[in-house]
Length: 432
Ligand SMILES: NC(=O)c1ccc[n+]([C@@H]2O[C@H](COP(=O)([O-])OP(=O)(O)OC[C@H]3O[C@@H](n4cnc5c(N)ncnc54)[C@H](OP(=O)(O)O)[C@@H]3O)[C@@H](O)[C@H]2O)c1
Image 1: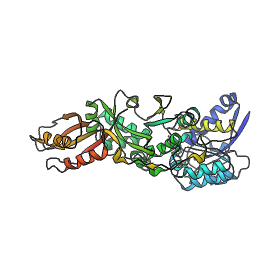
Image 2: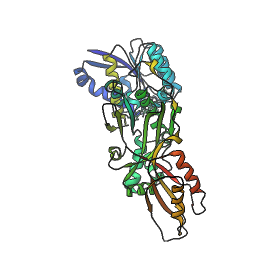
Image 3: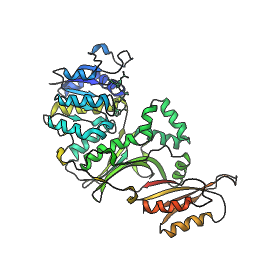
Image 4: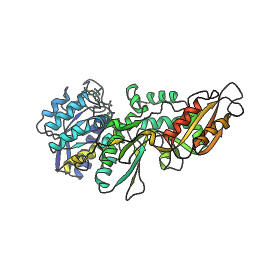
């Protein structure tokens, strides 16, 4: 029986679920696997806050860093979630004191991971982060342990549950973005502070940074991301996309193109027949294309205390079983700096919504630009919506694959037409 002594900093959604799970499972389920988890200390900001477990069963620390000084503590679990600040100080100090660290903190790993992985490597300790990407989906171990001899060509997926919930609800209930965001906040899916990271696409991009490092050995560099959030998505676009056989999802995808890294998080139209289109509500999913596997599709709960606590537990189990810790699945000196692939070079097909006056000749003027720039149009939908002639009407155009730069030039021309009434809405179409 291995006994793992741990201290937990952060007793919110994940920290509390972790303690409850250890309390429920230690005696039977964990012992069957020859592991006993012993909690030596807990810490959070407010000792008097009501918790889902009895804090008097554990030793309380006002300062989480003081727990590192407990000699027989093997693992510090960081579940506070600051991008730097106390979270970084705690992890850095723990690694320096040769303690293993488990964290769910994607923002911190994506922005400062390189330095911390170097430190963990130098001190031969674990810095484990299964909980940092896609909550309960075991994507980190799949990449590190199962696909480690495979060559990964592309990784893509839905990595943020809140935005997926919002887009699903907008579609199902025909509600505006603002209306659904309010419901998401009321239900506690996201807070004012978190929603900026969620809706802006940053949370998904933090996770993508970690995934692309594991897939392509790219140095952890958050600046390599192209990020576009969902706040400009209109329910009209969701409805028009549906008429064309698509759903709109916030898709994150990473691959290497011409020796450069392409890390993209943006809302995209996705064919209803694509498995990612059926991933609804707060679920997450990841598709991996490799040398050996055409598509490896993993779907599950991407957030929530219980699923994420399971990822922490799986890291703890790994720590209890190993003596050597390959935190990235490859030697850290193999990390390389990639140049960022220019967004203007990306080739994609696109959806455009052009709001115009309802008068003769409008459509032909617009399509003439497409011919002039040699862009092949796939479909056109002209949908007069109202009887009010003074109100603009939408023209929906989908294109075949085209370089973004070329499309941007056409859009500039279209927007300069006097009968085009607002900025053209442009969304990429997920082709594979
Ligand atoms: N929630 C999820 O579904 C999920 C999924 C995957 C990954 N994660 C990651 O897991 C981590 C924890 O997330 P969470 O949802 O559990 O967060 P949370 O509910 O906001 O909990 C944060 C905890 O940190 C404590 N804390 C804040 N400042 C502190 C300080 N200066 N010193 C000590 N403790 C401090 C808070 O104390 P009080 O309780 O006293 O306020 C709280 O217990 C984050 O990195 C998050 O990104 C979360």
